[in-house]
Length: 147
Image (tube, rainbow, N blue to C red; front, side, top):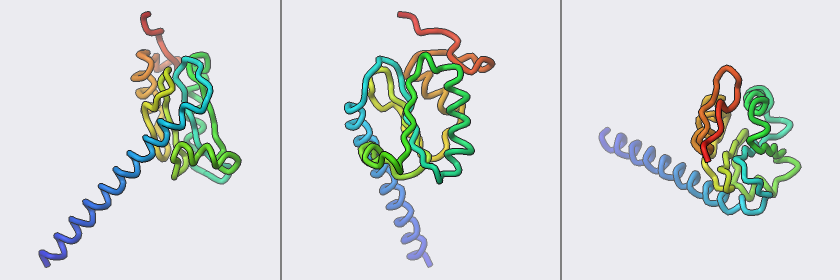
């Protein structure tokens, strides 16, 4: 019996290690892929989706639409349909949908979210890369960072 418990613990540990390695590889691929896009000097959100992805349509895109309603002038948005642009998804190492990638103003990967990212999580990620304090009532940045 103790042997089975040790084997189970070892398998769980290997699973966690494999998952962390996959995330690390995805971050490296995404970081190298960001150099291929246009740079505007603004933070960006890349949303990977497909026409058959129900969580993309029903959960992730409504969150993105609400955020962009207040932030469209300050954040670049790129929605990538992986069925039409599989090369872009491969460059970024996307392996699940929806996936959102937050880039800072320099085009560096700040956060990768596999699965549906909440509105609060995306707000916090953009606050971190931009230095904005968000006005929760208005849906967008409350102020610009001091220069």
